Image (cartoon, rainbow, N blue to C red):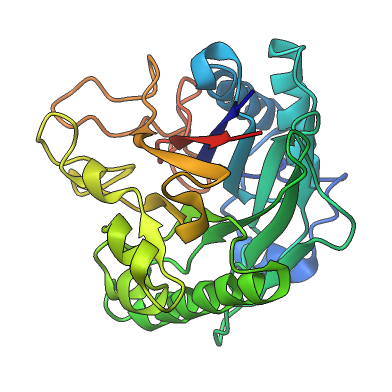
Length: 332
């Protein structure tokens, strides 16, 4: 019988270890980059934030938890292990593994995947970290060639956290253009190495909207499924386009800036995941996840951040981004 996978993405907003971090062995260059921003960030605050995040993750997929969750803004594997342990206490039926490695980001924040090891496996030497060229160190694009246990299929998944808009959206746009080119290049490489029918999914915080040049021109993404299916070059179908207008017709987004929603967190799939393919996406299922307490109840429904890193801490908060999720079906 076909099986369904609940796939999610979430920017966890600076999930750092405590200020002195004896177990994390924070490199000196990262300490210099962080400066005093972690002052007052204690183990108790770290654990409270982990608990808040785990509570949301455990609510995903109707309370069953995600099968695959991409995350970013995590400092290291240690905090990921804390998160997985907390989620595991809430969902004893799940066995989550971690796909992660330290990147060269100046602030020391990484991209990673949490996956149910009874549903997917990560074959040896099938995790890659693609450098996004920039004068200053930035996050790499993480590629994991998962293998589904149900059908034994290779599924290439890319986790993205593209360079931020700090210094100005347009002044920094070139860096995200390079990230888009990097994603498009390795999408094509997957098809060359594993075959043209290999399913590919890219998700992440792209720090740009679906209509921006970095995604449309450089990452080769589009809102039109038929273009993806009929193009002579590998394109990506961006499933976040319909969310921009919101289900109620009001503007929507995963991140708010100056009271305006921005659709920065997105899910994209290639031709092999459209139509009646063996591993296909349900485009109608893509959604921004707002659980009770995670959204401000005022005029602007922005996500409730936990804070820290020089900002006021709200111990009842979560992250400054909403998660996004989609369902994928694998046939026999």
